[in-house]
Image (cartoon, rainbow, N blue to C red; front, side):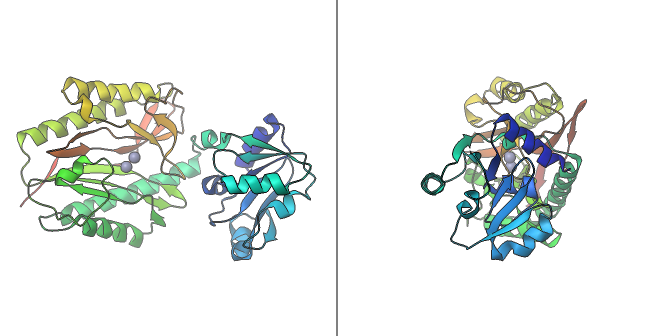
Length: 355
Ligand code: ZN
Ligand code: ZN
């Protein structure tokens, strides 16, 4: 039996429900391998159903052969079948389903108790098995190849959007299924925006340029950030870069089972604070990565759970000065039995683009 289904069955037995309905795309993908954009996965102690419409019929047969395909019209919901499967208590994903779907369930499901369930799957998904690690390793390796390519294209006069597009085109041509999020390519003052997606701004001499990007392979994301300088770095640019790098390496080297996200965050934050930039590091140290780009575990003030082998996390401190620009350095890291393995291999020494 598929160990993922076993885990979901343990969860539903703890919650004392006869079935759980999974609508969140990442949970459908985890449970059934299904990557279609509509459908309800139903897991019971002895049955597996995929309720979706005709557009996905052959996809279900291909991706989710263990699941019985139950067809609905494109405008219908799973309710059509739920009433007739003999359930007494059914779990729903309280953090995901829409208000209108919840109302619909309430109105049209008869004689069945609906049990809002916090997704245990989010937690279960934070520990990756060997196959998942392999997908993410491949996505990270492709991002490394992307970096070797794109750093050669940076020059004064090229736009952020053009760089983002070249990077995406390159990785897709090399087999990426998708990008894992809208790329951040932020130069000059814009590099001080932690989430500055690529704009029409042209790169200029003297700019910091932050690249934060990733791709999806077999449904799994990668995430990496590198920052370079166009022309020779000033002393202040070097100081900021070195501080972020020192913070990044120190928290990275502390990764091991048992340490918490709060503790890892503090290691980087203390280094940045000692250098006098505390107020310019306004976000958490990182996050888990998997089917979704942001998953558990937390690596910020919420990260009180100890790391366990199989977690895949990012370590991404930054310093953002509104006038001068910003620096962020981010690696993807696997927590192993005795420490960590860095999945991002791109060099982190400061790159100065000759102008
Ligand atoms: Zn990132
Ligand atoms: Zn990230």
